Image: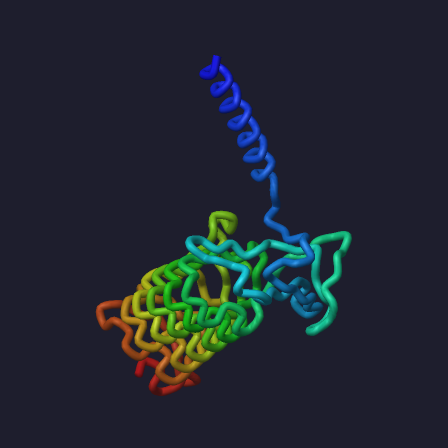
Length: 245
């Protein structure tokens, strides 16, 4: 009799768990709670939300961090009151220094419509190994991943399909000292620019095609592996003389 009761209870528990699991599969990864660990501000120029890590003590990163795709809860201006809205807005940018020096992050999946990674957004995230990006990213700010010595891959998410990002701007020191970075799954847009020391001493970078790049700053590729090749435009007269160090 006891065995039958135990078996019945197990069936009930498993059934409830299955229902919960199916319900969670339908979630769209949007945020609609007032006390989220993230805060959002609407940026009219970008046409979406800028995300900031408001209360880092609430988040305990042990594996992959997935940035919300959208939110119903956001402010119209910096410092304004966060308010519930009838429709969600897409997350299109990460605020400067939002995750700076967070040594617990191991991997990060960025939102589908993300366009901009702010200055110093992941600077000093020394445990970060992999970043999954959208195909919409056009700007990677100054020091965005500077000092991420464990960063190995910067690749397209599965949702991006085969369309690679056409990056327009890579700021100063953006990937400075990313010594293990060996895979970057994006292309450079026409007339794009790369700031000084952007890939400073990133010795494991792959072969690169910089044909569309109009400007490369001083020592941007100092320490580049001599066994690899960099394809350049017909003229690099506008580039810094010491762009390779």
